[in-house]
Length: 367
Image (cartoon, rainbow, N blue to C red; front, side, top):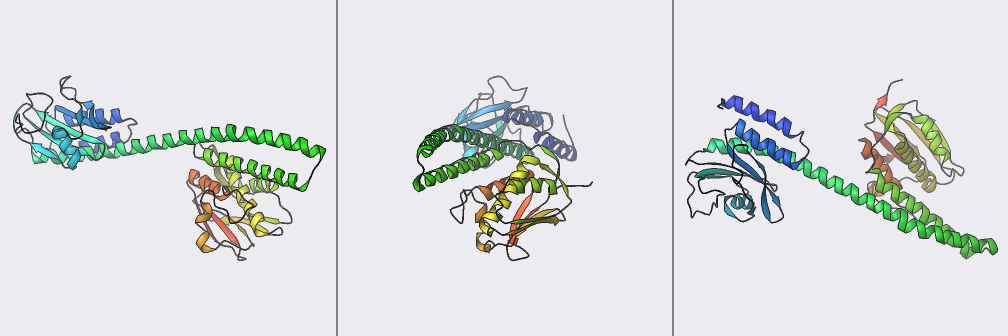
């Protein structure tokens, strides 16, 4: 097949779109060598992907012989040189002693193009000088799209592994920590039934704090692993429900919103409860809290002492707590919930010099 330069470029761009829809390394490699064969007329080509200290064939064109490619060490032959230097190679004549180390002795010329850290693309011919500098440039364009696809797949695999680690962590927390805590609480309750004292009350308070800490750690670990269940949520109603779960003391809540938003109801309630609890915990027993509308979201503000500008990023870090009352996970969970939804959150000064949380980039539902 012989295409004009314009047709070739257009065909490669079409392949680029298809490459981004692939979900495995093998499918990316297969599509790349098929495109190299069909569009660029590279009938004998292969992709070698790094696996430890080896470059291993993961895709070979349909016209190539079964033994037309083999795995190579990272420093072996033309493939190794390409990978090590990160530079494309054009060999017009393959000689027996030129260190190209071809897979078959009848290969007489070839090109070799790096795919970043992933591996190498190669095309060969049984005739000398079968490739030109233009062929190198077209191959580089093709594998640049392959690299993008492989980068994405690699990120997705890393994310999947991270989620699996978080799942294992959550399992350990729920079993290896919760069970002995329950036993300790049971023994303590038995002792307190017979004779209570201030030291025992302090032990009970410590157990309760541990219980809250475990809950927050589990929530923190699992938010990023569970899919969102989006629905239309009435913000005012959910805020009232969340407020009812907070130890309000003498605090006052004012809700000034009629918004309906697209959100995971359970996760949004976690966000609201955590911010409202923080307002009461650090704003004082008689703090005034207001929830209101923004053009693309909502805000929660209080008239407490506020958060210094220098701490407004740190408060979202897991384990950060300005005092001894909190677990240090409350606002990190809030941050996770916003990120999971694709929202933005920022802290600023409230209208009464307190703390103001602004959650934006929310999909507001018209009613």
